Amino acid sequence: MYRPRILTAPILLLLVSSPCGAADRRIDLSRLTLATFNARFLFDGRPPEGEAGFPWKNNPSAARRHLRDVAEVLRGVDADLLHLSEVENLETLERLILEMGDPTYRAFLVPGRDDFTRQNVGLLSRIDLDAPLLRSDLKTTGPRGGVAHGVSKNYAARITATDLHLTLVGVHLLAFPDDPARALRREAQAEVVRQLAADEGTRTRRFPIVLGDFNDLDPEIEDPSGQKPITRVLEIVKEGDRECPSDDLMNPAELLSLAERYTAFFDRNHNGVDDGLEERSLTDHLLLPLSLAPAIVAVEVFADHDPMGPSDHFPLKVTLDLAAVELFLRGDPDRDLRLDEEDALAVLDYLFGGKPLSCLDAADVDDDGKVSMTDAVYLLNFLYRDGPAPLEPSPPLPGSDPTADGLACRRL
Image (cartoon, rainbow, N blue to C red; front, top):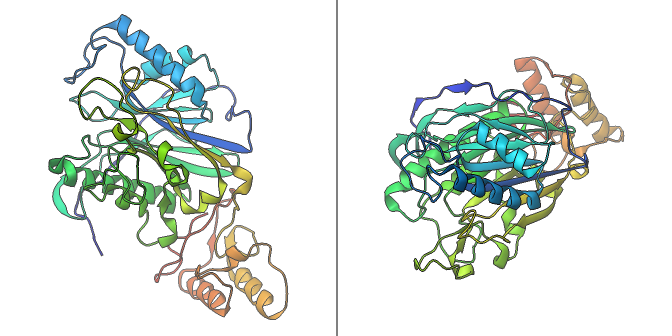
């Protein structure tokens, strides 16, 4: 099994803008919409603005026009949780909200480490965060080695939508997906993201959702340009917690038709014209846990704007029907939010006493697709070795596979 070489692994807590008003400002609480969009240097036009070039650099009036164009694009997206890449700062995000004319949003941003472009990643949310934003300053290597690298632009946002406990991991990875010189560095970044998402899923018992500009392709999903990835970036991130196989992530873009499956434009022949699908690729992603796949009711790409204009990227939006998410704790068939002897007895009563269970998945402790004596034995072995496990009185979420070491990776 690949085990990355870790140099540093601090997780920093930083205070962001203070939310106000109601905690959840969604109109339809039965649904949750998420989107990701690279806003292409959403800056204010005032120095310092980094070393990269863009048309509205050091030009406040042109920057305001760009912000208005981005706001127009995002009004049509209308997502409850909206990740934005290439944002300058929190103030720019707050001006974007004003330009959009949508007071249901709050802006969140934690400053990153990209000193060259001065870009950051940010979040517009209609749901107040459960805690201040996190970011990871981990530096590590990818599966194929190389120099340890970190992710200069990332955040983790803990959010509760109705009874669904989520952690959004927003990212912007190293650019140029076809550059071999950057492949190992971006794989190292993918390992950082994977560890952050897996840790949030296992340790905090939340659903990790990873979204943003990956600057890379998914080998499992063909895009209109026919390009193939030269890295394992998507494979690494989607693997999730390596000790919990059912914790893997999936890419909802697979539900789009091939002609719709793109989020970025690249002028390959440098003619200054959008030549259509052959110049469009799927490099922005919104990855969900497999357990949320049944809740997906819509996947959309918003491509009405000119990619030579506001942004050379297109918003990707996913809509979830929260009523379709079955909430349970694996190993807790009596649904009292505790793992104890009563749960083992509930399994035995079901098997030998004919007593019904309200959730067979909760009784399938070893997650092998059936309820058997093995599940009761598995749970009792865990309890007698490690002791009963009282759980926090919070809404339960789908569990994940136990490991050979017991229920160490169980998740509410």
